[in-house]
Image 1: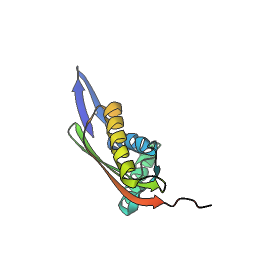
Image 2: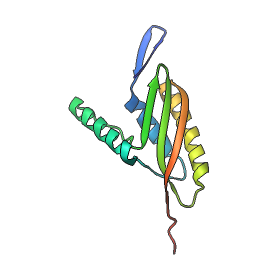
Image 3: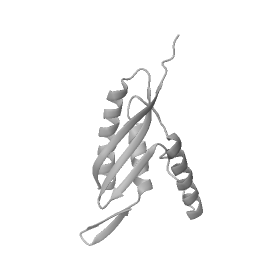
Image 4: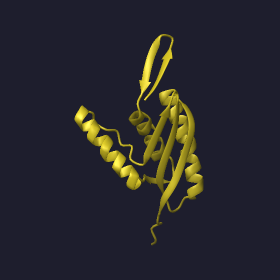
Length: 127
């Protein structure tokens, strides 16, 4: 959780919110086939979903995203699959930029790091 006080108003941004913003920005990036949760991500997503279920909250889709908040700064780690007709490194860079801009714009938090891991490349359909 990250808190800030601006002009006497305190606001709090929780990790699931940052993760949802990052996931949305990544999915919208051309060349991204999907987010990849990985084994650790599946366990975290299951735990987060159960916690949100107990609280009566509808979880935003954020599988494949790990967020670490420290003070007013955030680190975001994403795992993605790219489409086979796109260069994986270029897509990963585009995701970094898109996530950085979206998290900064939508949460007001300073982004220290956005790291992207390409876990899979979707095969190109042959005719």
